[in-house]
Length: 418
Image 1 (cartoon, helix red, strand yellow):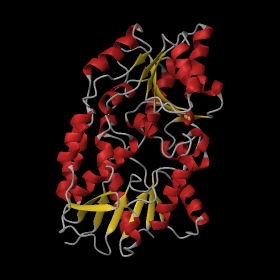
Image 2: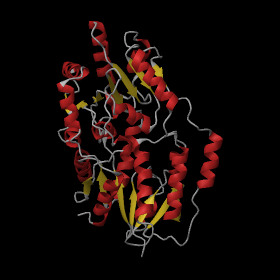
Image 3: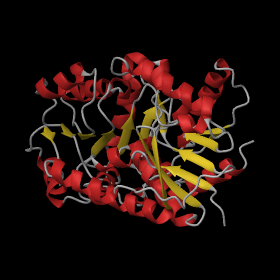
């Protein structure tokens, strides 16, 4: 059987140096795993660096996935979990908790990189009619290694575009990203035989942008992201006091200040304030939020910041929370919303188009600019009762997806993009 798929795993090196998976790197690694295991005879792997393209068989692609995951610290950490549980019960822990043991060192990463580096195999061709698949923007910075696709018009290229937010709201990102990202997207759309996105909201934005580039007939398909199997559980909070969770990098568009204002207001009024776990690393252009977390003494007994946590431990706490909060101003998908719903936890999220699309009526949606609406929803869920149980039953109606579901849909689109 001939080669049908060429999977670009050029993110291998950068994935290897991460302490754990980011959203895009998880999509990339799961894609490599899927094609290597589901289509081992029809798939070749690609790695491109400095315009040098390396080809290798699906067995090597599978080994690279294992190398990456062996290096990630994505396993339960009982010490960290116990420390967070102790804080939830008595509040005596510091207001900021970071995972200190990552298992990483530069030397160890370098050794794994050299041992896992894919070597070129001349017997792994990328023939005309082959479907090239790139889900992580790998090599999409001009002048990058994707130039070879221009010389191979018989190879059909399919890219995943996760969102166009840096083009529409550049003020939310670090300086200079807008121009770099615009060139990446223009290159991808110009080379693509098709684009798939995590939501119809992003698909619509990509179609509109393609038209501005003179590409009105570019096939674009929305394929909703799945959730990790770690979240496919329904546990409840057991004996823990009521607490809420918020997940994601602490960056401007995530709207952390809204939630901190609510917790500060509850403390000022002398209300029975629930605990709040903030999962996520500190990002950029958010000094006011960082200062609030460090200097607002009224928040210290109630808010715990956790910069790094494994997927199993994150699922442990999300599944036991009264609700997951997602007050973002904009998202391409908003994976925490799907993760919370997948494990039956109520979700309170922004009333924006993408959350209306992916939550499928299973979440409570509030205007991200209306603090009182959010505070009412949080107070409503703070006490265990009929309202909370109703919200849990609503969350449990959410139809979670698997990685096989996701990539089966991608393959169907690649084979029949029109």
